[in-house]
Amino acid sequence: MIDDGLKVLEKCRLCPRNCLVNRLDGKSGYCGAGSGFEIASISVHKGEEPVISGEKGICNVFFNHCNLQCIYCQNFQISRKDCRIKASSMSLEDIVKTIISILNGGVESLGFVSPSHMIPQMKIIIRAVHENGYFPYIVYNTNAYDSVEMLKDLEEWVDIYLPDFKYIDQDLSLKWSDAANYPEVAGMAVKEMYRQKGNTLLLNENDVAERGLVVRHLVLPGAVNNSKGVLRYLAEEITNRITLSLMSQYHPVQDVSEIKFLKRMLRYSEYQQVIEEMENLGFSKGWVQDHKSADFYKPDFNSESPFEYK
Image (cartoon, one colour):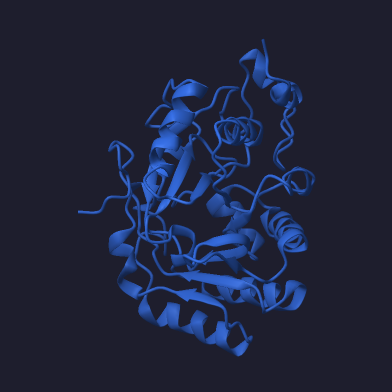
C-alpha cells in the first residue's frame, strides 16, 4: 500500500526541475532518485554552525542524489545521479530507531540534507518520529534550488531553514551546477523562507536554534564577484538583518582537477574581499570561518560517521 504522502511522486514536480516522471513506477527524473527513502547516512554532525550543532551535534539524515549537480560538491559520493555509494535498504522502522538512538544521546535537532527531491519521504520520517514521542527541532538543509509551492507546504513542518545561496551569476550556475535559472529560483525560495521565519533566530536555553533562518554562502575560488552579488541581493532584496554564514571551506574534489579556478583552494585574499563586502553591506549577525577550515570539511560516506575528521 502506497503512503498517501508519496502520491505526489506519480508526476514529480517537487523541485524546480519539474520532471513530471512517475517515480512510483520506477522511473527517475533529473536527480536520479526513486520512491524509496534513498538514505546514504544517518549520523551525528558537529561541524554545522554553533546554533545548529549545539554541544551534542545534530542528527543529520543525508539523502542520496540531488536536484543540483554541482561539479565541486564535497558530498559527491552520495549526491551524483549515479551515486558512488548506494542508498541503504533501511525500513522506516530502522530509520526511526536510528534517529531516536541519536536523540536519546542529548541531540536536540534533526536535520535533512539535500531534501528538495525527497520532501514526501522526509515528512513520513518526521511524522513517525513524532508518533514515537520525540519532537526535535527540524532543520531543512538545502541548496536553495527549491519550489516556493513546496516550501509553503513545509511551513508547519520545518523549524529552521538552512539554505546555501550559491549563485547570483547565471553563467556560473549553469556551468558549475547545471541550473541556469538558479539565481531566480533561489532568490524566490529564500524570500519564502524569510516570509515564514523572519530575521530573528530564536535560541533555546542551550543556545540551540529552535526557529529561524540561517543563509549560507560558500565562497568559491575565482568567483569573488558572484559572492559579492549574492550578498548585495540578500541585503537589497530581503534584508541585511538575516543571520548569515559565510563559508571558506571549499576544497577541490577529483572531478574538478582540470577545471580553471575550481582546481585550486580559495585564496585568503578572495575570502577577505567578500568579508569586507559583507561588512560594508551592514550584515552583523552570523559567522565567518577560519580560512584554513577547508582542511576539516572532507566527509567520507564510506564511514559510519562521515564527519569524524582524523
